[in-house]
Amino acid sequence: MSEELLAVADELYALTLAEFTPARDARAKQLKGSDLGTAVKTLKKPSLAAWVVNLLVRRDPDQVDQVLTVGAALREAAAAMSGEQLRALTRQRRQVTAAVTQQARSLASEAGVKVTQAVADQVEATLTAAMLDERCSQAVRSGLLVTAITTTGVDEVDLGGAVALPGALGFEASPVASPDPDAPAAGARPDLHVVPDPEAEEKARAAAQEALDEAEDEVRTARSAYEETVSAQSELEARSMQLQAEIDELKRRLADLEASADEVDDELGDAEEARTEAYAELEEATATRDAAAAELERRSP
Image (cartoon, rainbow, N blue to C red; front, side):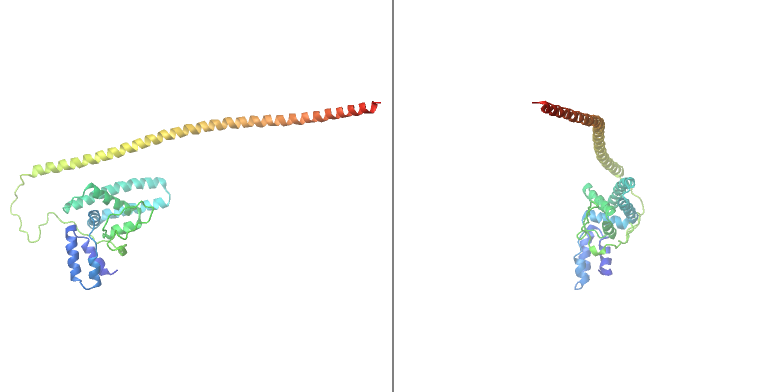
């Protein structure tokens, strides 16, 4: 893979979704007749979730580094079989991915793109995959994703269709500075006076209501998840108590059986001694009888 192709891909995947296809086709046309032009023409437009992740990688690489650092620590803990550390890092992983996903949604909003919850779920799943799998981590860091990624962290992930240039794993996307909302656009005439927006208060109220609605949705989701975990914990506690009672009963029965076995062993020893004595008496009685019979026979006419 040539450095030229990587440079072109890095530039194209930093664009907005609306800009991507025209820019790609224009660049391929410039390079028409060359292998590079053919390769550029085949670059796929990213899905919305993949574009959001690529945007996050370029606009906020520090956040992405935090995700991948926690992921590396999580994999080390799993390999070392450190249960306590693994549980702590798993909680941290969920907190980090949720927070960074929200940051990605904010960056997309700044770029004029609304991210639905379904797309946000794909973004969070991709960040989770990057934490669980080193190759997924490299794919995310490349900034060349074309689809979202999911993994359980057990089976190897096929990244052939997830990255624009699969051979670019190990490549790191070039950071792009966030646009300054206060900077005047090129060629724009400066404002000479400020005109207040008559709808500013209504817009602010609508934004606040939207934020409240989203927060209430998140509270409901979190409460539902919490109630599920409480219910699951209660069921497990009840099952644990039941199993402990069964264990105690089995221990009591085992103690009774061991005591009975000891008693039977003692009785068996006594029975063996009684049998030995009885056999001796039988032999003695038999000998006496045989002697008497012989004496009788000798004295008979």
